[in-house]
Length: 152
Length: 315
Image (cartoon, chains in turn red, orange):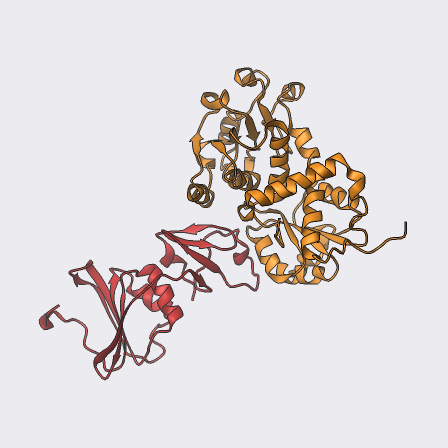
């Protein structure tokens, strides 16, 4: 993207999550538990042109670097995302997300009759399968609608 | 079988299944050899929803091994009605018993329970999830009638919510079995069960009518279609009526067809079928005793590998 098209300014320190599927930026923020109240500078670009994705979202979070578990969950809704760690305006690390084997405590089970929805002191646990995730307790498979079940 | 708990049929290998069924055969042949084998042990029967045959079958099986049983009584009068979590309940009961059998209305309840206790847990039905001890007795029944390979099995009725169906379909993939699933469109196998069947490369086909496949079947496993699955009672009567069989229906079937049902039946198998050689559902229910004896014996043996077979009793 050339400079005259740049819609979101550069950041000094923090994380740039690029190549997020169009429309998923707010879910990315939800996963990271960022709602603006933390005081970080947050910039969001939605549906900006992308050679690779056609349309993509970009999320820039100042003064915040992502943990591995946050990246794991991001991979489920934004499998094409790249994570750039920025320090003093320079990209010091650039990583593609990788799908984890399982995710614990971040998704709610869509099956209302699952024991994890029964007020038990239990974290949900989902295995990552070929085309979605699967509840370890009731075996329900969640595919396209993963973002609707993020519970953080 | 080298398992600590029995939670789902998908955890069982062919060897696991055959080991339990071999033992069930030994138990059936010589029950006296198993009497008092686990004297001094206690089994907790934790039934969070009503059950007659499964609870009595486990109770009877345990007592025939010399095991004492304890129960929770009516769920309405137990601590569950005071809002205690399942996690707490099983942790308390763990201190009272050497093993527990759990029936619960929520899917995944047995998995959760097994995470909290170190005594063996047997899933005796978790909502619309799994019912693996029923599957072992189903397989025992099929094996004693036909063997377990080179078979064609039809499973008919409520395939979506039927936990006995989910467990049986998974276990049959360990054998050389063609599976036909016959149900109304709205009660087809759930996505998760279908996923597991596809993962194993199992040969399965789905139908809305029994008639085109009936003459191919060695076993027809019928399940009850429940009224509460339908928003409208007329729709229920219309659909359920298409999945009822009687002696006339079975005239088209192979002479050796075995008709099974996990029971209780309502009207999906007419009483006139009872008089035919096809009817195997009462034999199937009775097989619950040797199979559950073999299962409890195996799990308690696994939990006590030093060869201690219970407290010594004076003879």
